[in-house]
Amino acid sequence: MQWYILRRVGQSLVTLFIATIVVFVGVRALPGDAATALSAETSNPKVLQAIRQEYGLDQPVPVQYVRWLGHAIQGDLGQSPKTGISVSQTLAERLPVTLELAGLALIIALAIGLPIGILAAVRRGSVADYVASTTALVGLSVPHFWLGILFILGFAVSLQWLPASGFVPLTDPLGNLSHMAMPAVVLGIGLAAVVMRQMRSAMLESLGADFVRTARAKGMSERVVVGIHVLRNSLITVVTVVGLQLGTLISGAVITEQIFIIPGIGKLTIDSVFSRDYPSLQGVVLITATGYIVANLLVDIAYSLLNPRIRVSGGAA
Amino acid sequence: MSAAGATVRVGRRRSAGRSRFVARFRRRPLALIGLVGVVVVVVVALAAPLLAPYDPAASDYSAILQGPGSPGHLLGTDDLGRDVLSRLIVGSRASLTAGVFATLLALVVAVPIGMVAGYYRGWVDVIVSRVTDVVLSFPFLILAVGLAAILGPSLKNATIALAVGQLPMFVRITRGEVMGLREQEYVQAAVINGAPTRVVLRRHMLPNILSPLIVQSTVAIPGAIIGAAVLSFLGLGVQPPTAAWGTMLSQAQQYVSQAPWFAVFPGLAIAVTTLSFNLFGDGLRDVLDVRLAS
Image (cartoon, rainbow over all chains, first blue to last red; front, side, top):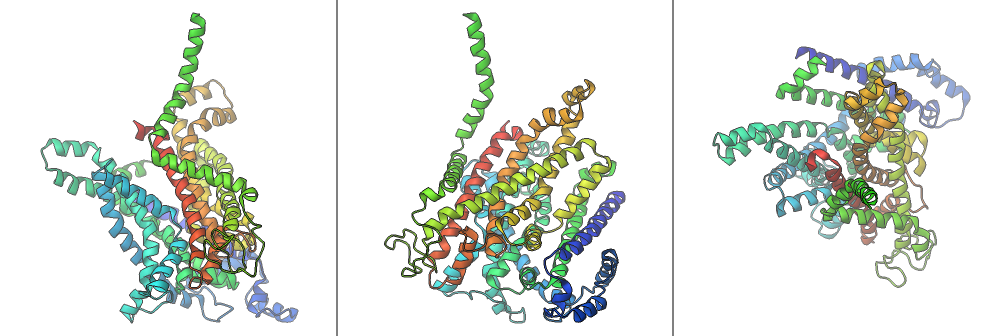
């Protein structure tokens, strides 16, 4: 068991290390010269030379990488050439906004997806199953950003129930929620479809398993069989799948924040691409990749704790 | 007489698999609807210049932001007085190109890599697995946005970016399937008979891993179509004035209060296209997945 966890931690560290190289090299491959950007677009060669020296841009790339990584580990991700604010500070301000959006979306997704998934599996082949499965497929097919625009059209422009865009901090809970409602629903709907489909197939698999037949043969009521045995086994699978949806949530947040003008890390990503704010871009990508790798690791460990079969085969491999 | 009967029987047996496939598919009305939708979109994209009533780039400044059903323009006109229906029809090309080519590109690159990793295992597999983990550690859209920013905004580069994002999934599937097949007796028999690795991989393994790859493709294509629309919407894909559904939506967003209908049609086009692919893909999965079928 410990061996399995250690091995997974080691793998994650290697992945993270390679990811930092990819981020570093990737940002340097972006068009435009960093020194020019830092100097507020001057073309004076002396100024550029001085900036290169000051920021170590005249050093070999591997040296630059090691220096950058050293700073990054200490939480220093540089500062934005556009605003002069440190990237870590910007991230600390924007990350909670995205986390709130993602958290609300996740709650909505589970609240919609789990009950419908259970219903569809228990009533397999019924009209309810048919309607639920088809609706889920529609939910998967409708692009978030279009749904976002339609929501703005319907609830903000026509009905004027909710503000069309913008963000209010949590210090004003009601204002915050009214601004977050539409984006969270938009982001949650796509995920709800995924949760529903996963729950349905996990339940169907459990329903056909031997332990369910045994439970039924023992004379347990259908309510206990489904409510306890099947549900618990299916939830393990679904929790894992949902844990792995973090990347989808972040991807969704990028576009949702853009449409509803929410100052999270998704909007920061797009803004920094267009304003050529490369330190910020580097910071966001690094943070999301790290978060994703850590989340994957935690999901795997949690899964191995919940499901002994993985532990055994993982340890033997 | 008897010889002819035998020939017929052999012929029948050979087509039996295919007709069972068709029969199983026919029993799924939603999958059929999906198939029809896919065919329609493909035909529209192929015949776009013939079907579009107007030149999609031609502006008519006397008819700006006309609503649907206005004279001469079934779906109205955009902010530059261009015919929305014509732009939708021609825009299908960008979406399908990105969706299909991103997936094809990912397949062409990923399948050989996955096969080699799954067949040889050892250090090759370790490297391939770590690299796919790294690519997977970047959320799809962040990766695509970053790559599109590096390569420069265009349909071609957006397609490449989407292909890179799809690589890990195809590599993983191929690798897993090949690892399983490697232990099969018929594969080992081929190896013992002295078949070169190239032949083992291409003739004995490739045909057997096609089903899961086809199923994954039907998931990947609609994903790439939405991805391409998102990149175009963000200004990192197809560049104006070229017609594309994503760019039409980003234009429409600016006129949400004046011309709400303008935002409806391009999104509907994307949704219908991806839904058709998803319905078709779901049906295909049910039909191809032997475990589910039995």
